Image (cartoon, rainbow over all chains, first blue to last red; front, side):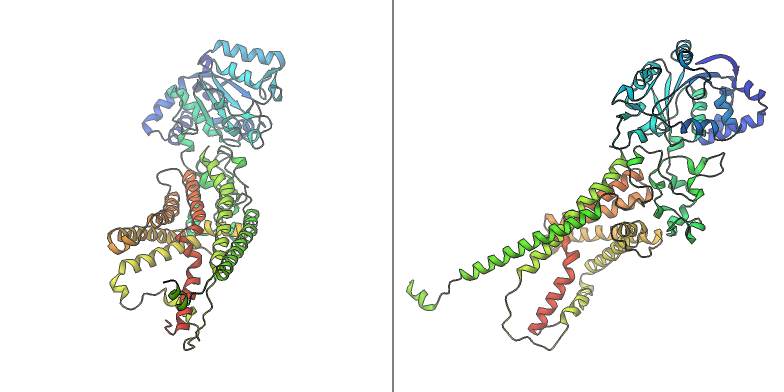
Length: 364
Length: 219
């Protein structure tokens, strides 16, 4: 997968990154990925000697939020530099070339690095009608199949590519599906989130460069190291949940004191992501720290998993209307049973025949 | 179907269906019981103990003299289970949120640790009373399949809730879905099994106390 050009270490030195800073990044990456400290030199050595891997980035039914998140999250960090140092041979939003030249760049990268390049996808793929989303007259489905054929691995970035996301939300008018529904013969790694955390991408890339393979994945295709625990388990507000201290509204005393946001609909307990530990904007904050509950954006089908502002234990269906209907039906059925019981009793009374001693004597 | 989708179904369609059957079943059973009526009591009532029905409601919740010593397992197990279950059901904050979502009513909850202890006590008590039911010849003779079924239906919500809260065996999302589904099973079965005593217990106690009062043997 290496192509000619400077190694990552050379590029970093050119950018003024010290050896100490570089090793610090390697140590952070190792600890984030739950690797032992003895692996830090291995990561450093692999990254130092790695040539820029060729990356083809395909954007399908998406909002460009994932690209925004990864490229503009913060100004120069080592993560950003690592990202910049990959050879991004094709990316609709970022590449200078357009039209035929852009497609030629994709074809060239595919040929030169056949079997070695990484394919990154954001956005879901419409199966309903090929015309719903096309690039250079090529349907998303055809382009994905064609480009994935020669890829070493596929990384589905963002919840749309990983699980369908908002295009696949009910009623899913375009018949949107995730990458994993189409690509079955390649390793597909999901980096869900709306948008996903930048450090997860760099962590996965570092792993790929160090070990030549993708990290261990969970049942939903996510790297376990970043998606192994729930937001709730790692939340700094968790002690308030345990103590039963909750914000009731977004501006009450509890909210000001930073109490748990469960009652305001926080989906932290059912959401697997690294926001609570890595945080955003270089560790500045994450949604819960800013006073808003987690909306569960890294989980499949989170758009259709009930209102964002209803507590997890609250009903989300037409429960009230259903109960109302049940009361009416119950009263009606109950009245019918009562009437039947009464008429049964009455007819039993009417049919009651008195027997006298004389009658019994007669029947002897 | 992913765990989150199962949870969404359980919180949505599943809960609505279960509540419909639960409410319909309870109303039907109450009408059935009350509309049966009783034959008119032609004898003159002994008026020596007015309010016997209401007193019985309280007195039947306490062990009669001597019985506590004779069958401590039944009484202690029964108390621990019912009190533990009530605390878990009524004072766990997510449960209060469920009631608030359905009715708009809410009240303060207890710290999670207190509820946790109550749940463990209720679960242990359920196993103790089951062991007693299986080993005591009289209880065993009186027990049918429905009693063991009711025991299981009561255990499942407590057990799955406990496992979900502590994140053991399977991940929280799936366990929470299983917990809600087990509660829905309980709601569906409640009106049509002996678990209906949840609704009828005080009605029948009042009736027994009142009729005995009329007969001059008030408690």
